[in-house]
Image (cartoon, rainbow, N blue to C red; front, side, top):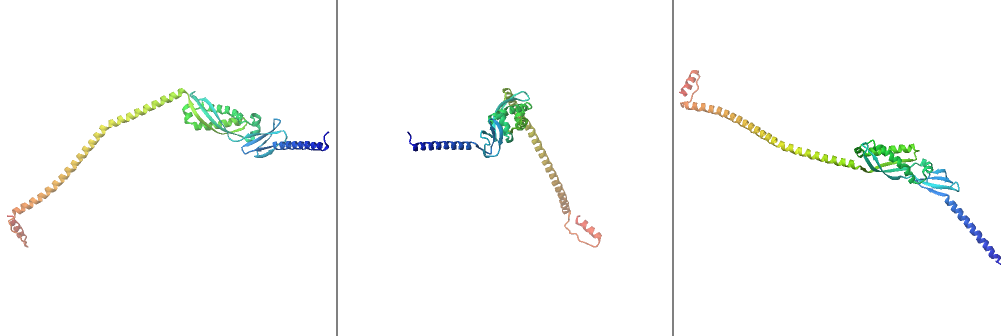
Length: 292
């Protein structure tokens, strides 16, 4: 038969264990009702699967119901790649990859959870067909050469159309950007590009050859023009020289004439110097006598 003291100790131990279990359970229940929400998330609160509230403020939050659940939904930037093919205005195949960046709108978190839950992969599955159809509608309006040349214009229009389509669906998401990468074309178009490049190269070579031939053809003309210019210069030089010689001869002739007259006067001089007189007649007589 157990000792009374042993029975009393056993009862205390059982009570202690029970109290400990209750405290642990209460502590677990208390801490399990606390959830943290960061700046890049919102929390949708459900009770037995029914959405009851949404918590957008960051920090620690407590459940208002013992069976409440927090569903953390990120509002940070989400990215996905979409490999697709489309057609140009000429019905040429165009394949590319779209890099799409989007965000969950905080105000639409409850509705998104009801439709797509908190898994971003479900969100991507919702946005992908909208983006693909929008891009296909765009490319069919452009020639295949313009799809390359006007890629930035195409990208901006894609963002606008996808955003409008999402707004029509309820505006749950915001498209931040769309990038068009890894663009490829059909073999037929690649062959056309190759043929066009060949023709362009041939045209450039023909133009270069024509320039060379024109240059060669102009050489005799340039040489002839140079000879004409040289002859013209030589003729002008001779004219100038002739004019100078004529002027020199004229001056020389005048000088010689004066000298001949002086020599003739000297030759006829009789050696008698003329004397001045008041009588004009004697002057004249003297002059005549000097040259007789």
